[in-house]
Image 1 (tube, one colour):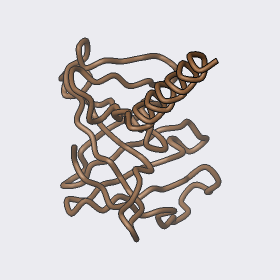
Image 2 (tube, rainbow, N blue to C red):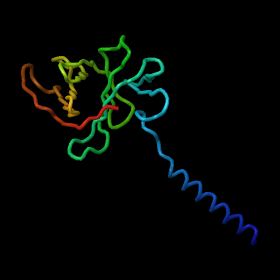
Image 3 (cartoon, helix red, strand yellow):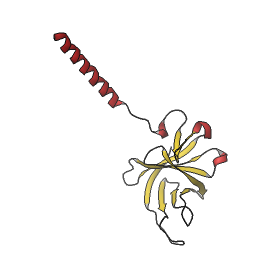
Image 4 (cartoon, rainbow, N blue to C red):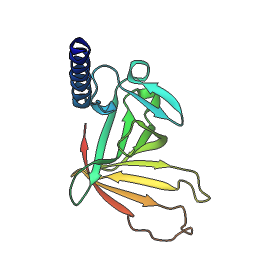
Length: 154
């Protein structure tokens, strides 16, 4: 009986050690992993290994600058110079966008509404990001930013 009790105790200690070590493992976000980065746009995976390097900005809550809420980026491949992407909720999943440099600002437009793109994200040189939702606006209507973010280039 004593041998069985020692085996049970040893098994419990090993199990607790494994659980402890497993809880210490952290996952690496897509934007900081080593090797070519991959993102998922509209359900399909795209990799830097095949498209060239991605350039992106992580954008956080402006007030407390915590938690990535959105990430916008572009492709450095010259064949894709007017395409960009937006990733939602700190994940590596999102959508394609139209990208352009407008003066000194970076601009991403996406969604298809009756008046063109439904959504726009603009980053100023100081890292301030502005999100605009045009989905319920009339043509010619003036719109203010729905959300403001603090963005930093990765």
